[in-house]
Length: 580
Image 1 (cartoon, rainbow, N blue to C red):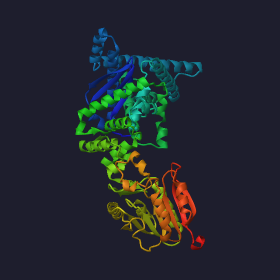
Image 2: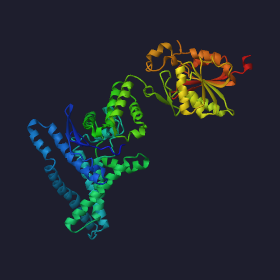
Image 3: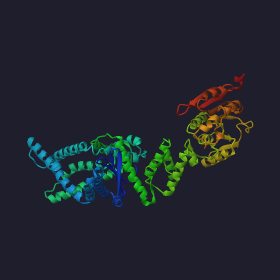
Image 4: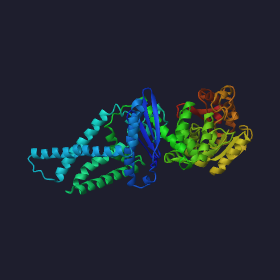
């Protein structure tokens, strides 16, 4: 979560309201549609930079704009004959309504949370036969009664207003989706938690509960001094709670989650239920305020989360389900990892242009690794060109099997990598073992890329151009490993990567087994006694490949990939006397 992300959301009558920098948006459910209003407000961005002061600004601005949002939502729903009245209320929000609300609130608050608790405490003391003297015990009992009354009032209010302020949890879900970088569509937002940690309601309620216990401890007989003490103390409590929230939302661990519990516990007072209509209302309002800030081009930069959401929605519309694709595009441009991406607020126009170019290429079906020109394999980064396949995650199983075999041997081994491509298998083996590694490929451009990767990773691998074993002479190897082309010729045009991967590295002939026939026939001549063969195979090819190897190999076994598909075949060369 970005600790500097300056956005607040709260429910209004039959809708949702969001405040972000200089704009306030209100979305209201009006029968079958969502009605939107956006208003530019005075920015308080400079004041929010100062710790403790920003808490008071946050609460004042939130209350002021919540009142504005309330009246605006009323205006949006009422008949035209009553619009004038609500226009007056909206215009009066800055002063008149604020003053009236403050006075009425103080009167009611004193009656319910000061006079009534004192009355109950005094009578409980008298009922128990105690002398009524102000003391620590008296203050504690008074505070406990006040808390019970306060939470009861909040709970009752939440139930009375739930039919009007039904978007409370929809706002929380939408805010969670925003900070978790989840696509802002109804289906994804519905899956989010209805508890949002940095909730203005939670901050104010927790501050009031703490104040109820603390303020009675500082009593002054002079009414004016007593009032000043309480105002100052409450401001300190509110500011401290706010700063604690600011600090905690930067982290995510068990200890912090325990400290977050009071915030979530307070939110239980509101019903958890949401429906598609109020979630849609919250989404539209949030998108609107983000878009307005985007058009405003704050600091000539773009809002990263808003741009992320737009690209994500385009991907979903075009059938790209994995949202990590959007993350990786931003990470590639901004040179950060996915964890760091969450802390970035803005993106420069030049970087956004690159992001959009990459996104357009991805929408055309091009794999991200091909777009970026590099891919990760076994923790190493490999450069790619048009003549090299993208190293696949499943191929790591093949490399892992070879590395394990080499480490189990007492002496250094000699390894041959057939059809090396980018060199990912050969280079990985050379980096992680003491084996002597030779790699071959028929494509000179692929070999050139493999040499660049070896130099970049400081790996000792010898590269030769050869059509399988053709140029190897009489060399013998302890291990031969290969990930040869194994796609049927007729299936290549149907592949998603058909327009982007080199066909020479894909085409395994009419049945996909051409290279396995040659390897099964020729490999024994280049293996030492007890030499081992490791082959990656395609889905459903295990039985045929094992049958081909049966004449000259023993101990023929296989390994499955992470999708439980047989992906690797292992075999040991027969002893000479085993052929007799």
